[in-house]
Image 1 (cartoon, rainbow, N blue to C red):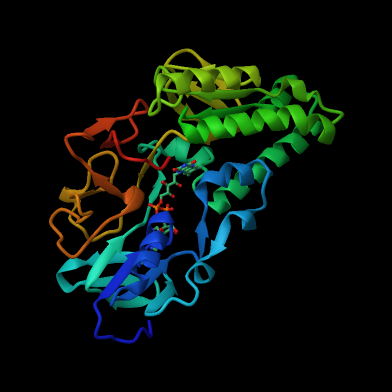
Image 2: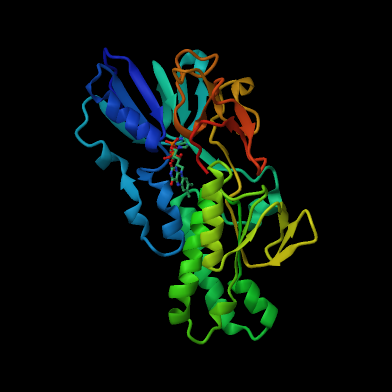
Length: 334
Ligand SMILES: Cc1cc2nc3c(=O)[nH]c(=O)nc-3n(C[C@H](O)[C@H](O)[C@H](O)COP(=O)(O)OP(=O)(O)OC[C@H]3O[C@@H](n4cnc5c(N)ncnc54)[C@H](O)[C@@H]3O)c2cc1C
């Protein structure tokens, strides 16, 4: 990778998300060599992905070049590379651009969408964890409305204009609100010859309330606001499958839609090499102690969404979506 050996210890950070960037910045004045690896050369501001999906923002508004963020840092090297394996016995990484040794390793790889092994859902549903996925969703929405203009078949047209969002966490709630605003403000102007009032926005939550990791008051308010915006809120409904046309649930309830957005779970974006025994079941996160040291690996420190720090105050729990076991006090990615 053409990274010079220095007398200072080499800290390799995998992932230029919120965690990786903050750590690289904090280490600037220390006597260490910092190498940041990311499979993209930009940082994604995930909280605004829903705006890209719904056309409110262009992708470059939420993608920042990593080199620019960390420009002028001493003893700092960035390489565009995907890490494919960690070999802790040799303190070595395998990547798409070659091997790299480390003195200390910091996995900060975040999380990825969890379909809980349902391959049918994985094939047909849209996820919203990256900029390319958000752009795909945006294209699909626009294509469906163009398609809706071309059909006389009543049910088909409705299905093309219907949205089903699975997962009533913050991502699902934000997206439902944004879609409802588009339905009200933009669609009638852009598609005057289509009865866009018939477009339905459904949010389907497996548990008994929206935003179940937040206070009950927040849940009530979110539901109230969404319903005012015309969103249909379905609680205690578990989606079991989707063939690209019909959403099936555990009950007799079904939805006809050409757009199902899956916001019902994430799992840690782990890399092969660290002992699977140390991963948190379900959430697929690396179990760390109070210093973020990965249990069983003294030279490896995991941060951000990939890390699971349990304590008496924050024991593991399972979310209503059956999503992941994670400590209740921990900020979670969605
Ligand atoms: C739609 C959405 C909305 C959100 N809204 C909010 C919000 O409002 N408030 C809030 O607090 N949180 C929010 N979150 C959660 C928040 O974005 C995450 O908690 C945060 O991004 C986690 O930071 P991280 O550094 O752990 O990982 P990430 O930001 O996910 O970064 C991980 C990085 O690792 C890289 N990477 C992964 N695997 C590899 C590999 N093998 N090799 C090389 N590079 C790799 C990725 O390319 C990525 O750049 C939201 C998340 C989503 C998806």
